[in-house]
Image: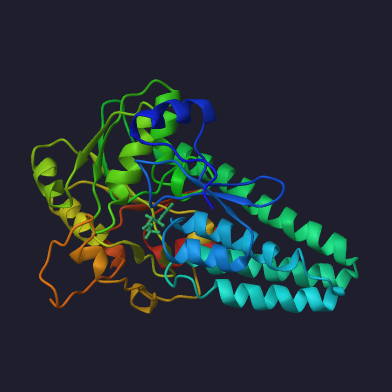
Length: 364
Ligand code: MRU
């Protein structure tokens, strides 16, 4: 499966050659997916050719981050029909089957279900239009590509809005990875840092390492460093200390699902950061595309929270760090209640409380 594999000292050269590291790209034949489990040590693109491979990549965090898994799943739906020899009704049934299957890969990020619903809806329209099987397949590939292209545009807009909240010289703390690696490009929470860099503003980013899977250390620190953004890595339990020092003027994080009342699910540890921010009088911002806002989920308590394997905690560093047989609780996400959220930054602008009303207005 490995198409491209390099070790430490060559990684920087290779990134320069590739200009921008993309989480995923359609190469005309298959989905080339950057294996994020291997970063920052190795840059490996996996050629994915079947829905099963896409499902496996999502489940095992080879691709992760709410928008990126939605995009990958959309391509997965297409991969499930491209070799099928059937009339359009048969292809439509395969789309439904493939989407149902891919929806079981991870439960929390609503972008996954949003993208799959979009593929289903496009397929239904095409079938109703009576297109040929070849045209049906081509249009579904195109839909996946449009989802990817729109995500890039959305994130740039989120970045522009977010940047209005920051000033030159600000210290900004982020948790997990809501960057280019988690999306088509730019990221959501990291987008303002890329735009600030373009505009010559100096923002000092503090990246929580993000236990247990270290998305902050392995991915956020990596992608910001590659882009020349001023980034400092801290352990999760240092966030309060850097806030107390006065180094943090704002917190910005991404999200996997925003409930209708403005409660926000994001990587485990986000809630603790929000509480710390409130205690220090620091604004806590959530960057969220509309595709992550789920008006059908009333509150944070209704968001399904994924629990992952205990090995992530007991032997996540390549060696055992806890006694065999110890009880482990390993939720991948937590919910930050809306009262801790200063604002939600979307591609359509910045939304504040009352969230129930103001989030609804975004969709009118
Ligand atoms: O388990 P992960 O790495 O998929 O979790 C990712 C996050 O929590 C991100 O903050 C979120 O998906 C937003 S990505 C723009």
